[in-house]
Amino acid sequence: MATMPVPRSDGAAPEPERRWWAQLRRDRAGMTGLAVLSLIVAAAIVGPVVTSQDPFQPNLQETFLPPGSGHVLGTDQLGRDLLARVVAGARASLLSGLAALAVSLAFGVPAGLVAGYSGGRWDDVVMVAVEILMSFPGVLLAFLAIAVLGPGQQNVVLAVGLASTPVFARLVRGSALAVREQEYVMAAVALGATPARVAVRHVLPGCLAPIVVIAVLRLGTTIVTIAGLGFLGMGGDPARPEWGAMLSQGQEFLRRAPHIALVPGGAMLLTVLSVNLFGDAVADALNPRVLSWRTHRGG
Amino acid sequence: MLLGISALVFVSMRLIPGDPALIYAGDQATGDLVAKIRIDLGLDRPLVTQYVIFLRRAIEGDLGVSIRTGQPVTAELMRRYPLTLLLAAAAILFSVVVGLPLGILAAVHRGRWVDKTSVAITLLGVSAPTFLVGIVLQLALAVKLGWLPVTGSTSWLHLLLPAVSLGVFPVANITRLLRASLLEVFGEDFVRTARAKGLPERLVVIRHALKPALIPTVTIIGLQFGAMLGASVFAEAVFAWPGVGRYLVQAIGYRDYPVVQGAVLMLALTYVAVNAAVDVTYGRLDPRVR
Image 1 (cartoon, rainbow over the protein chains, first blue to last red):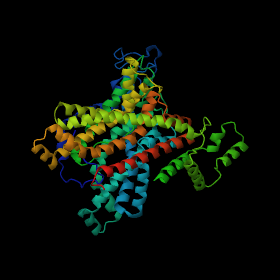
Image 2 (image 1 turned 45 degrees about the vertical axis):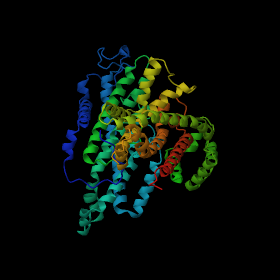
Image 3 (image 1 turned 90 degrees about the vertical axis):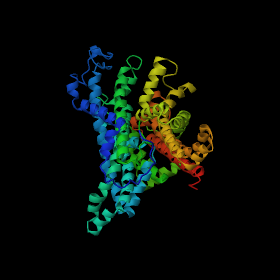
Image 4 (image 1 turned 60 degrees about the vertical axis):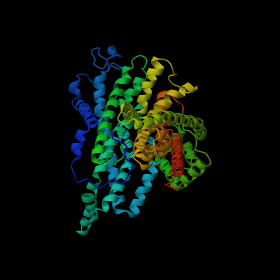
């Protein structure tokens, strides 16, 4: 973990050197995070091979079994195998987290790019929208979206993605404002490239480093927020293996079988921890000045 | 800004599929009743007029009535609002009491075990979701050891666990920021001067380095208080703490839109007010901003 960088929204100019990968590899904490994360991703991909059990199949003869008793991580209140469920949950969590990030990027990057590069009225519109959206505390925006869209896992993903869209819009706008003044961009304009081409081919690549850094740093937050909405029962079907919903069901049986809550909770913590370790390392390697901590978060 | 927030909340509620008059009237209502309710609610008017009416009533403190219970939303919210503020304030108090000393110790003993421990704690703190911390604390201290009540809000003891689980995240942020600001200040000339004139390290830290380092930290504490208003939903859910957050989540479940509207509006306005107060304080603290 590095010392805290100064908050700054005007992304720095792209660094021509490609030393960041070498620096990333030297970061022992970051590499540990990456290794653990890789294991979790591998488990999520080959999940059905790791466990022969069906994560959905209830077995009322084998409810509340503690870990080790024929089931490596025990069974839940309906006798479902917890290892199978937690592995299926890893897949759901990682995919949902990435999908939500994709939503934020899909809306935030174009909005920020247009605002920052073209300026003028577009800039005003985007900035007012961003200011309004950013004046909701943390997860409240996601709640509002769920209230409109209705419960369900896809809606949760959409809601969480929309809720962090302003973060990316503001970030990209700031970067685009700085990159716009670079000589290579002016050269492209002078050569007669169309504004759209300049924005996409010349300005956008210059904004990539901060986008990547913030996206990686927000992955943990995103996973936590999605799990949080699942915990509050907004993810729809409670039979689906989703860490937040599993944790919420496990809370009812804390006295009798705490492992039902602790297993998905542990998996969640391990995942977010490794994502954050890796994210901090990427932030240090790519751009030491980008903010590597968050004041907002769900969960 | 306030207009923007209220407009966003208002428009969101109108975006919900389905006729609000039908929801109010219930399943067995006659067409006449639905038509009457529609007029009562002003739903026959243009959207902008509806918004102006909504705004005027909201300013007067009238946020409509709950669809589920028929109770006025404002009264219901005001009953729960102090509990959420209390929870958020207690969480911030906890995070300040733990975070400030931890940040100072980490910076002073940079690279030593105290520092490494603080780094580990802050990493855990930013990674562990409030509801997970809450459940683990609940399991350990309430269910297993029986030292504290599991859920509820009937005594001061009930406040402890939700406040601590909510406070873990700001502890991490405060520690991290104060450590970093102190390390930065340690490199300044006036600190070197203080050290050079032979002042004991303890006095160098307390008299010279701490004040400038605290400026960004105070800002973060204020911002964290605002963030607690959103995050408290999770602590309230784990510990059945009857605040605005729990009310909001239940209302989303019941599709009780006037309540959702009122609760979101209230939390967002508080958040804006807190952040504005932070800006003002920052100006006062930092002579360079004036």
